[in-house]
Length: 143
Image (cartoon, rainbow, N blue to C red; front, top):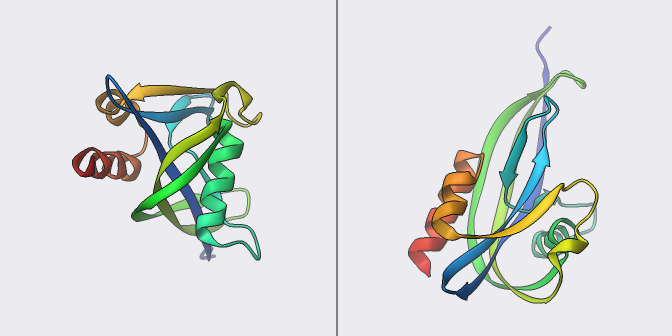
């Protein structure tokens, strides 16, 4: 039996600051297989919510930081298989460049194990997902 296809839309952000160079925030998660991964803050766009609104909410929830959108960076799309639901998922994630306004990275939600600022080069090498690495590379070129 062929698995059915599900479409998902998510949004997130690259929160940056300039101290001794450009720094960005990454979130550490545990995968289902128990592996730790560093990634950009992102999550589902909820019903009735705009993409930018979702990006700001997800950044606030996952990093503890309130931010403002500077501009749109890019969208990435990828496929994966969800064995629990026996579906192929096409996921599109919209990313925005953001500046922090307030907050504290220690106030992240429970699904995130740790939130840290990294120099952008280190963040690019640490980021677990190729699409997110490409988003960080675009930010580096832009800034």
